Image 1 (cartoon, one colour):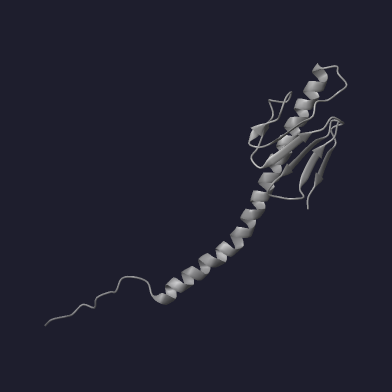
Image 2 (cartoon, rainbow, N blue to C red; image 1 turned 60 degrees about the horizontal axis):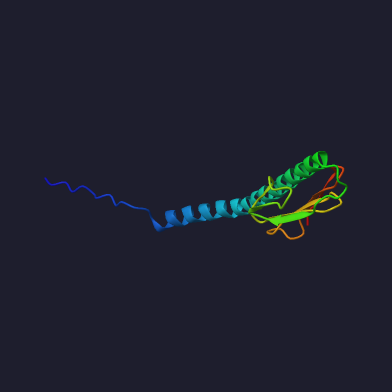
Length: 129
């Protein structure tokens, strides 16, 4: 007596593959907008950090020099802010400007309309489009 064993087929059916693809595309549709939002927040945090560092350098300069004129400087990263604020490193795609009235302004090139400022008294202002 010969008994034939049924061969089991290996692999996935087309229906199983389509269900997996649908689940993966659904998860991707949920995750991608969140990723863009996290990236925007990270870039805004880099701008804030660079402006705060420039403001600290400005306050340090003012405390060391008794001159009334504040030197203006600006830079777009990756670079360092101009003299006398060479210690301030500017992040990539961030523009920092120090005005003669003590206003430090930062913008990010990937987010037009976004601006973070700290005035001479240390008061921050954030403009989010």
